[in-house]
Image 1 (cartoon, each protein chain N blue to C red):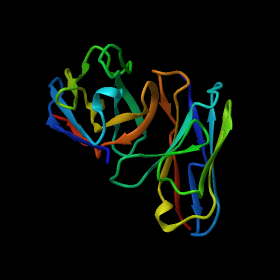
Image 2: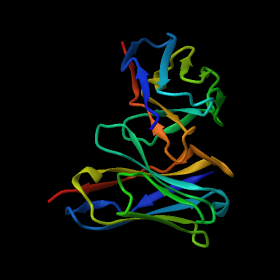
Image 3: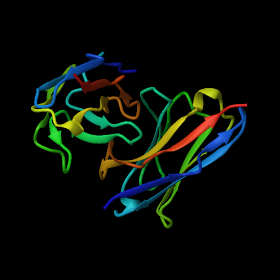
Length: 121
Length: 108
């Protein structure tokens, strides 16, 4: 069974930093590209970042480019999101999502339960 | 950016009724459209990918259709567990994937 478990969320002041983690199990992590998607309270879904299976290709939404860094450790079956210079508008539940199919990006086949990041003074 | 518009914003129906949800793209996305279901406090769940393919474990009462700019998610007979918010999402412009604003299906 595919499982994705996020951690690392919490309350942080504007301008602060936070590192999210996503622990994967139940599939060959090193074969799949991964994503972070966020959802502000009471709002819709927003794609944040993508990383290919080998980390060779990385993309970010314009709203986080230059502030967030996605990475992965295939030996540890883990995905990360380093978030710096956090703003109020970054407040959201952050989900890690596995692409549905190997080598086919863009469809979130499996999702974690999410971790809440609150940016507030 | 490809903008997805979903209608209606809210659909009030009774169990057993048929639900028809619409998603319209600002430009053609071919068949690169997915549908997700989200219940309160839960993560989204993939229902349909590439416009008409049901994801693993999704009941046959869920079906997707359309191509280009106009897409439909149909729930043939609503079960109590189907009352939720439904989002469409395009990957045609990957990595600039975008989601629609959602349609809430609630109990009449």
